[in-house]
Image 1: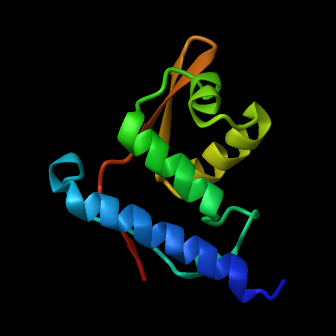
Image 2 (image 1 turned 90 degrees about the vertical axis):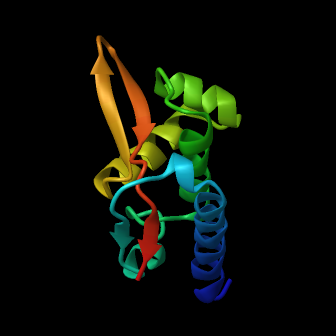
Length: 116
């Protein structure tokens, strides 16, 4: 598979999420989060893959979630994969995990995302 396909898929998903934000401006207020375009190209090494855009969109539209397990159940994806994706999103400051005992409540930063 050429290298451009994963990048294009990540960019397409990012544009889909950006459109969701644009159509619902009352849900996303404040300054924008600026994501460098290189973050799209990093793939599984902490970048914004299509799956991570979907995780972010799910947290933004249905969250906050009381645990990683709840998010994994809502998305129908394995817990281990969700955990990796959430950690990558936390590293990019797109998702916040507040500790609630042994669990982490997940919420998205409500600011719009700009890819530059």
